[in-house]
Image (cartoon, rainbow, N blue to C red):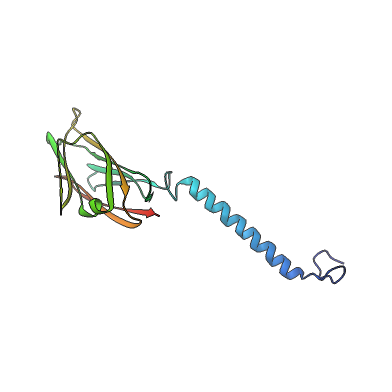
Length: 166
């Protein structure tokens, strides 16, 4: 008698059902392992799968940000502008950014800032090297898919997408 044959004595066994159960368990183990690896790689928050850089066509503006964020934690944006810049550079965060995020910190300090139906505007002094780097830490107000617009005046606008988990 083979170990995988159905038995009646001492108890009744259905080995086909047992094999299907074992296969389902193995599929579950693989799925859990894949979920764990995806989480460690940043699919759900900080990590290499989450971090990305959006660049303008002429490469003069770049935005580093996290594609995946959580509603309860800070998400980070780094806006860089290079090339010949005026002494003061205006950075505009579109109305969707203002309505979907609360800005927690902003470095360097803006020379002037304002907000309205056009979004948030920050005027920064360029660095002595002639470029601009702005760090923004913001907390999402709600969860879901967000399309955000960031514009550096004279350099154009970039649209970025972010998925915020609950």
